[in-house]
Length: 532
Image: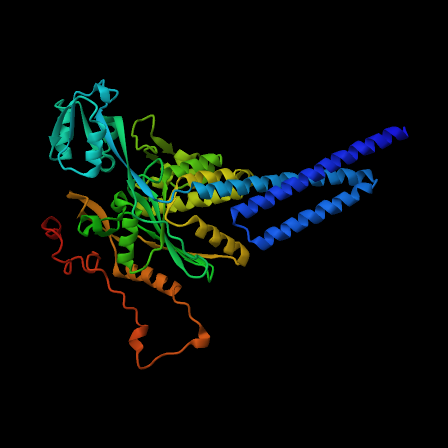
């Protein structure tokens, strides 16, 4: 009997010793991942490693304890701690990989499509006998024609997209070339477009960006990030409409973030079209830097970085979380994420609290055509969805999927911010231990009118006119955040009071509610000028 007890005790000690060694290995693994991730301050990592070492020695010294209850507790403790540390190490590895997956904005992608009528028999480019395309030459068209040079079909040029599509419908050509930009505008302006045409060939062109990754110290002075939400599926490297536009003004000194939302239909200069006025969302077709630089001019501020995301990221994040619970405020029908109006693709949601998957949540976030809901309703829906995502991530189920969510999100982000700078910012925030405060402002504009846009100059579109007070508000928020007052040195120079005045002057190309009638410069072309 005694031999059995001794044998059982030896086996028990071996099990505990193996668990203890596993604990040490996993503890070191956690510490190494923390060092490689470069997000946790080194002093905390060293404290953690010392604690792991002390626990290892302390638990080893308890092996002489004979109390069976204590031995069981020791095993349970080691297993629990090992699981927690292993989960923490894996999560840190996922975060580290996520940072490396963020696109640095060194290139963009633009697309040209070969489309044909949906009810014909053509299924691929080899079936085309006559191909139509616009006569106006640009880099994307020239690249596309070069890519199609291997195919033997007759070519026909047109002066306008309307003529091109008309002859396609009339059977004069079998298919036509259309850019992603033109196709998107057609889908927005013509609900039947998606149901009438189909894509049989796609040409992708990669465009190198001239903008370098910006590496600055984000811990010692305020900075501004322009958030652009791409109204499209796929990767953020593609060009497209900016459906969401937001400025994040971050003050790392006072631990405050001010969020400024800007209406996608805001009427601002388009620098790529000789500063003729256009919708803010249209500037996305020229890259996020174009929209970022123009917003700098409009508000008289400096924007340091941009971060571009796609709608697909919202779908992927929510589906990765297993869906979210949202109180839907209206009953509505909306197109799916691929802008399909086919009956089988439409998304129908009834009013009320319910569980939504990614596609349903995106439909709710995008919907704005129900009377009385419009842009403000959509922005409320977006806030509710963000809140639901945060609630789910804070739940036990969500926390277990947090690493996967971070990796998914990183795959759909493109930014010119250095990831080393981002890591340093996170590390500093953790090290300071301060809580952060958040403020929000909306530049929606209360005046919506029909006016021509530079990108669609033959049509009048619904645009939002800024008021000078809106512009001044954003400028003042930025100025106050970047003006640190030190009361010990507080004094006025009475002989030079002008130096304390804000000298911000409205850009002459910005159309506002106040200058709408009388100070629009003659710089604008006749097709715009006469409508003012």
